[in-house]
Length: 229
Image 1 (cartoon, one colour):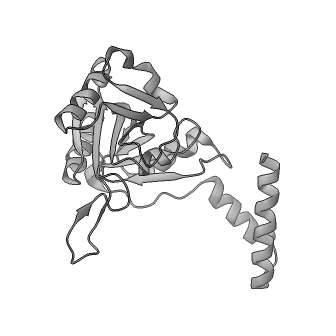
Image 2: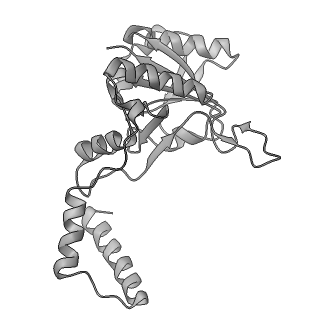
Image 3: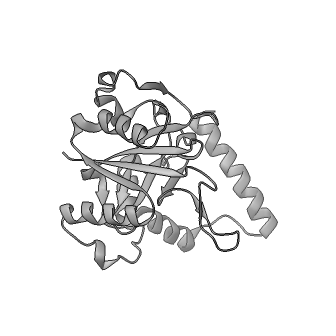
């Protein structure tokens, strides 16, 4: 489907909603107000605790991520493949993983780990471990921001039981509004990713007797490699 086809389909759907609500298309001042808001989106409230120098943002992100049941390793770029293998060994996990097929992950020397078996592409239900990058980390809450695309299929975030994330220190921002600013700057108007996932620690639920269970709707383990630059 081309971009024009996508826009035509969206217009058709929105026109059908307008007809059902007995509303006309926006025009005049109302349209100008909407277009002005879209062109300059207002920023929401900012949390003071994340208004910090970059080094302190990194430390705060790590603190909150660990508080939300993720594990953290702060490493140099050349240590990334070895830390992945070490983490799998420490947790008695198989030395095999499905990895995001593009992006910054390709700059690491994965061939240095002879025992690690990697497959690039989408995750399947049988994959025990996924390895991905992250678009951003949010210091305010220890949250990861994942942008979908050919280089990062969404299934990598959801299907494997263990999710290993490689995050650059420079991609850690203070709050959610900073992350949205980066998304708009990277992708531009009308070109946002199909899916944006915000992930705070492993999947969990407390629906059954108010007892927290990990791995309810996604990975039960999350290991974040924060890469020094």
